Image (cartoon, rainbow, N blue to C red; front, side):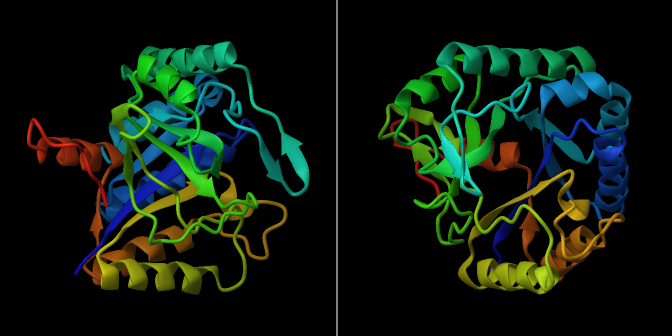
Length: 267
């Protein structure tokens, strides 16, 4: 038993210095520890700080995918009692296209992966119309299932990646973002290590999510400007023999393992 850790950062903060400092600190840690990770980037932030992203790209340790252009919502979600409405389908399609344009313009890349802002209950399994938009935009894997029926981020680690074959999109893979927290809190390190223990014991995939601002948000019980918590997460995972992998590599490996006539399965 080993388990796999897929680290994905949503880089979305437009405030001066936040995304830039995060990319610098995270880049140094991931490069030093040889730990691959994926940056799901809001296109608007990439347009604002292209040099910081180019420097991160030059490290050769990050993969770059998208998080829409301006952080628009794909499905309604209630957060702290406030209902955040979904954008219209035309707007969503345009957002995906614009985000891809920013990636191409600044980094020479096209995204095949997407984290939907806020994430949702059931992901996109109840919205084949949105999956159709994603497929047209070139999206082949998505992190959209991150909330329970009460819109809380309490998704079990036992919920593993799955294909949207029942919805008619067998080439699109969902990576549920399990057990994610928007802010740091006392005991957060122990919480992360306990999750790593669990995936190692049960040979599971953990789709780990953190934001570029998570480590110093105003409501945090602790601050961590140097990302020591992330370094401890990576070191502990490696000590446990957990494999760190990029989302796109996991996705492609599943596809390559398939028999041409086999229905894709994940988990």
